[in-house]
Image 1 (cartoon, rainbow, N blue to C red):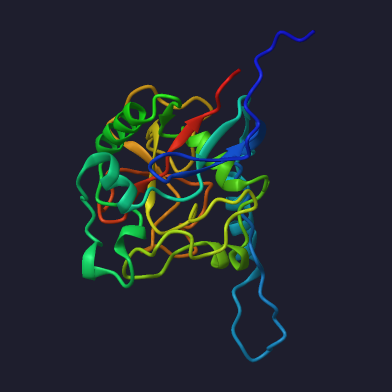
Image 2 (cartoon, rainbow, N blue to C red; image 1 turned 90 degrees about the horizontal axis):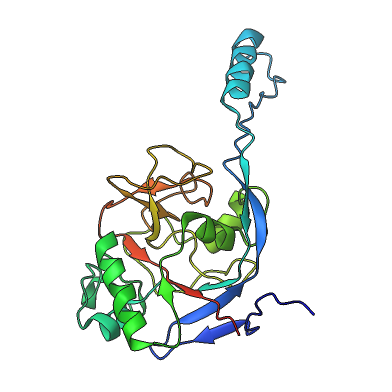
Length: 261
């Protein structure tokens, strides 16, 4: 008989604060793969001046030099991650206050359903501590960068196509939006791209992509997922940014650890 630990098999969970969580099963992914390409124009218009072939040859060589194969990351334990970004209402239930810039009449509709923002990484840690005190049956924390990215990719091996991203990402706006207004990813999580940047646990490595081993110390922490101010170029799960960022577009999504039995 196997003596290995067994995990609760619920696919979703809602806690007493109203936060919904989606179960993520173990798996692997390639992180940091970067394979830039160079497109060549159709030169059917003979009257137009075109760049010489030598320019594209140089560009292709530069693309090859910049290419990175990436590295494999294994996620060997299941976990639950927020179906939505933490809302202003949920934050206020736990913290007793609302630091958000986009609250009240600054946004259309019910501001309490918009993601909380204008929070620091330290604020996020306090929120998690208080959430753990309220719900002693579970353990909450910020996700690591790899846990966040694995959940955001939802099984996709390549970066998200722009046509798909436009259906999922909350971007190009002037304010936050109520959570869950766009399509979810393949695993049922909303707003993994856009709306607000999301804090994760890791320190920033001062690079565009993550390293196989995250730094143990640093001056800033990693933000993932882009914000409502972003566009197609930064609404991607592959790259990361450094906090504290703008403040008014920085929030969080919480991880709940799977319970052994």
